[in-house]
Structure formats: C-alpha cells, structure tokens
Image (tube, rainbow, N blue to C red):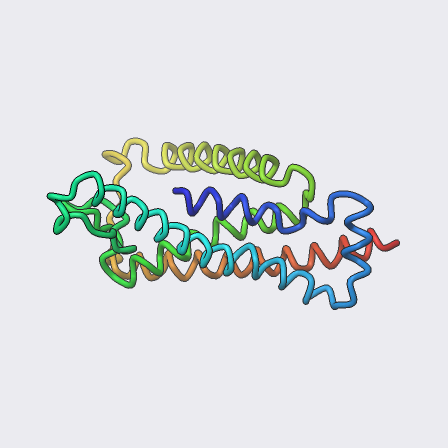
Length: 204
C-alpha cells in the first residue's frame, strides 16, 4: 500500500516545475527535446522511484531485524528478513505473490495506477494529486453506479446476478496483466503529448 500511495504521489509531481512562470521558463529553456524532458521526468518518477522504494523497504526490514535481534537474542535463529514475495496472507505465511504471474499482475496494476497520476500531472501541474484523486473517485462512483444499474436491468428476474465464468483464473490473470500494461502505456503516451502541447502553448 505504501508503494501504491507514494508511487502515485511521486507520479503527481512529474510536472511540478511547470506550475509557475519562473520554473516553467527554466524548463522550456533547457536545451533538449520535449521527449527528453518528459522521459527524464518519467524515468525518475517511475523506474528510479521503484528501485529507491525497494531499497528503502529492505533497509527498513533489516533495521527491524537488527533491533529484534538485540532485543531478543534468544530468538536469533527465528528472526529473519522478509522476502519480497511475502506480500499477502496465505495460510500461516504472508505469501501473496507466489508465482511470477501474480508478480506481473501486481506490477501492471501499480504501473496503471501510477500512469493515471502522470497523466493528471500533465493536465493539472498545480495540486495534481488531489485533483487526479478526486476525478478518479468520481469516475469509479459513476462506473459502479452504471454497472449496478445495468446488472439490475439485465439480470432482474433471471434468478440472481450470477455470471458463469468461462475463463480460467490463470487466463483471467494474464488478460488483466495485459490490459493494465496497455492502459499504462496509453496513459503515458497521452501524458507526453499533453506535455508537448502545453509546452508549445506556454511558450507562446
């Protein structure tokens, strides 16, 4: 959850330097193409942030291990660092991402959520996180309301709302992963063209 929240917050700051005249002028005067400007910001907020977050996560985990080993020396063989795959509850252990498919789906979902805030930052340089979050909440509410209404209209009087699933769980996971990645790439592309358009407008 920290990864998703701070990843979206980092993405909302991609166009932070475009929110006032002085910083915008400094950005526009940088001797590079619009793609290079956008890509450098995208790289920092997406890839570099992910690497830094994982390093910080492991450092925090190792700090926990050291503190507990000092506090409870009799449990030295029991206390250990948590593997990164232990991110969900399954029986007695926290093993949510047991397969590569689960990991890819989690990453695709993260990139999709992050891409929404990159797009929001290119549309609203000021207060991007709050504005994008508010729009996403409104869209979700409208989507759920329309979906519930359609389900009621289509399935009322047919013995419930159940739908027979023809796809396996594995196929559904692969489809969801592909859709999330495709939508993330689409949002990043739209954000780039929006940045390029705003750069031209602001220049004039």
